[in-house]
Image (tube, rainbow, N blue to C red; front, side, top):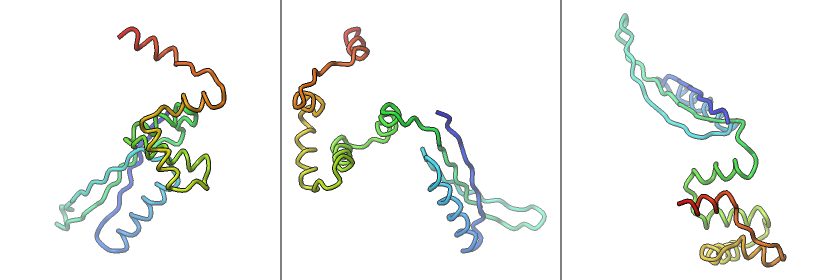
Length: 141
């Protein structure tokens, strides 16, 4: 993981310059793996002419080399504060795009209480094993 920072600035003195700034920022956002975006407005006065300029700055934190394994995906989504039910519904749509929203909601409601991993293992006759590293951590607490 190599987090990077991109700083994009643009003048806000005309509709065209605002449009150019927004176009530049949106183009960057579409082509990178974004972690966070912050905006700041800065007023500057040119001393010789005493003209005020307003500049918009976008601070974009991104990482185009995010870990694509389950661990990277887990870290990415767990840090975003998504609800478990919404994640489960998204997962259900990924596994079967044809699933109705009604069915996805019913499954998400059920597995909000029950353990999906245990039920899947039981359904296909696989021994459900607890992660030993996590078990040892719990035992040591």
